[in-house]
Length: 79
Image (cartoon, rainbow, N blue to C red; front, top):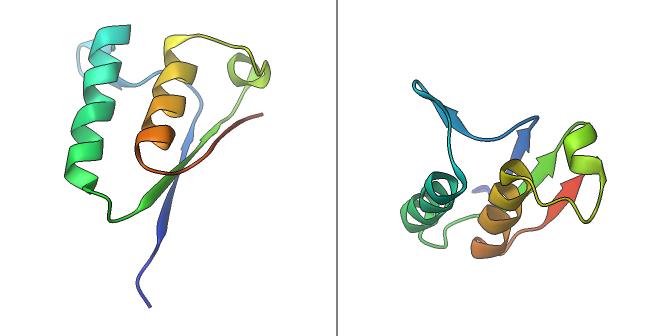
């Protein structure tokens, strides 16, 4: 059977070889990943660590995971 979902686990903000992505760059990454996924998989995101525990957290890392999950019909959980 084919996979129906992807589970992304993260302990921080997205980065590349130049360092951590800014809020706008992280948003653009979420858009590009969603386009590449094109609805094939649900993307569920798990944020791991103190940065993710507060349900009202608004860091770039939290916003990225929430945005990616929402755009790909998945869920976000921080713990």
